Image 1: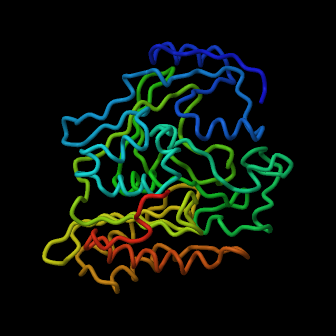
Image 2: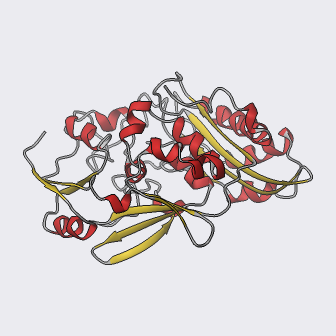
Image 3: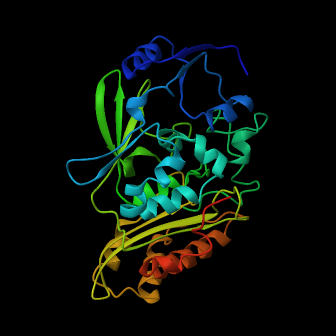
Length: 339
């Protein structure tokens, strides 16, 4: 770790002012990823702005439009077990509980979950080239060991994947991210918050310098009747997804009226396919329909030497999760909380 200055912010305005005074400042919420990156010598903030005492960002409240607002500093555990989330947005609750460990979920915050960085082995190895860490240095994952890497939306610059489970469900729910910063407040649709690597893999999301996530808005529709989150991984405890799927359905007499499918572990951001969701509307909720959607979602997938299996794995996961969403009580074992 480098030497650094430390400031405890007493309100959001103070945090924003402090950020403007140092180009190498970082906000500290739960710190579960930031401190890791620091210990690995991958980030070197000169000013640490502790925002963990900002109680105004620790609330879960109802919105006037019937939705729910999740404060950025509410912990992942408190969010997953909040009665409004469990009852109205069980897809989100299940996805959060499938991530990390109970200890990490007790510390990690909602805002921090959106900002966590890839777990690519080459990114975490400071001695290795990595375009995400040092732009222009190369991407050894493309011709290296790439078992966990992207099969959709990758570029010649980077094939890393985004690791969050919570964000896969937020993408399926069409959440909105609320932000404040030096130029005022703004909102970003969840689909536009994270970005694909293209030629600038070092930039993970749409945040500008000094901006702070204040909350996340969930719409009124929570798919509480028909939902499922399936996470396929190498072990049940504390492992990132090889492939995960969040599915929400609204049915009328067995026919799909509304559908959301988001994938995790396959791209630089949670992956949605509007074409596949449109394909499913008006069709019976059957394995054959979900298989058709899976073929659309994976049509442009590209596997590498060690991860080609993820294409077929993702197709099967989409079908299986679609069937489980018809009867959420059938979810197992991928929807059980991580230990």
